View 1: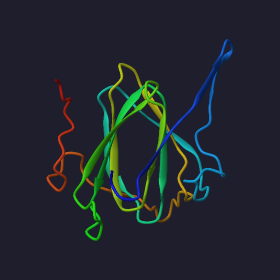
View 2: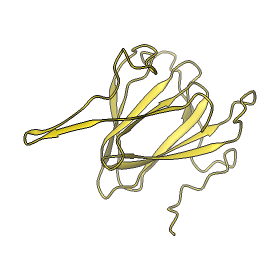
View 3: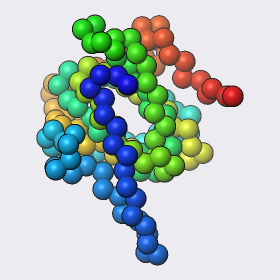
View 4: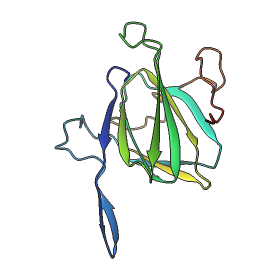
Length: 151
């Protein structure tokens, strides 16, 4: 696992009315601080990658559909420099993925319908000076193939 990344298996509580799933609590071991909460989606087959933050830590939870979330450690001083990790998250695997600053990340919707991600980053989005840095998903800078892998 890439250094600094944490994964929390989420507990789903079911009854005949529906379900409840806590995602992030301020008494969790991995809680840092609260910036904001937002929702982002992707349609089937859509890739949203690569991006990273210099300050912000992200907390991704896929609440509808399934996503392949991919992380790349581009931090030259990291013991896991160059490592790529894949996570399959969503209704079939409810997890929270904590992504530290400077770890490049992206996701691809792998379900047959739109997938929904909730993110609870540690920082408030700054419209004048966003802590958001992007790299093309097919850039040769990161050796990763977003195509579906069969078998």
